[in-house]
Length: 381
Image 1 (cartoon, rainbow, N blue to C red):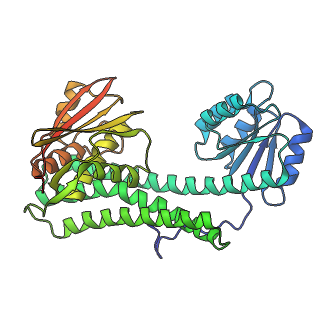
Image 2 (tube, rainbow, N blue to C red; image 1 turned 120 degrees about the vertical axis):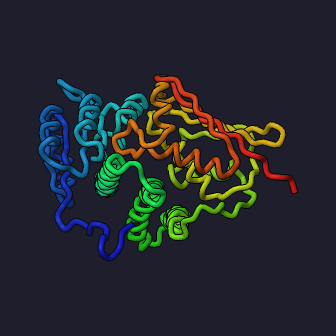
Image 3 (cartoon, rainbow, N blue to C red; image 1 turned 90 degrees about the vertical axis):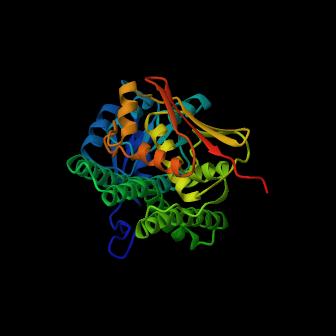
């Protein structure tokens, strides 16, 4: 999270770079002239020329015409995203239809405008998208630093096995802090940007600021709990209280995964057990993160009651695992992810065990993975 020693990057004093791509000279130069009052504008008459410039230079935004000879804007956009996934792209066309708009957005465009665009609308779009690019690049750098830290951590784990209990606990702490801390950083960045806009007393943005502040507060509370657990580390069982597993998973989806629509809840609307909210958040954080990083487009978390037990099933349609990979992953210290530590499943099994819950993992390579846990239901009061 930004501090006095590690502040957010200051607002750039120089103009942001913008690339205008259009095969028609008149519209291209007209757009470039309009933007030149606020941006450093570069132009290209062909998609191939534009891609070459994007490989050589960093742009805050690209204004790209859809209809062009040799390579159209949709194909150019797909190639552009391979070169620079963070830069904002605004698609322009004089042949605006719903179909082309949908194609552009699916291919990775950030905004869609009719051609010729209204001057005020064009300037507003480029301002907003250039700022969005800056935020994405900043967040990408932070994520890269996190991955490098994870890689170093993984190397230490491999070099220093077997570990004493305290060393393993510290590794688990760092592993679990990565996700919520990334959330805190991301929302804190947005908070700063929205705070600048709130100076204009825009009610809608004021509400956004309150929403982001709430997310930061909840994620920070989670980080505080993990840190406090380490500070008072012991083998004694934590203080358990009645809680709702459905609400726990819902909060993990909202706070840790930004409300990711791929994570779907089904079955019971409430599933009461006794346990530690934050320890169970760690479990579901790890299991959902594994599913999403395995390429799952859908992760269904279902809740069912059978007698005096609550059954939670997490099923995804990701890459799946081979039988050998399952055995190695359950032993701990094994991961197929470049930035992983191989401790996630081990953490889950341990924490579920302290809650009296079972842990069963089945997987089919190429088809997906299912994790099933059965909890003792909380006594009805």
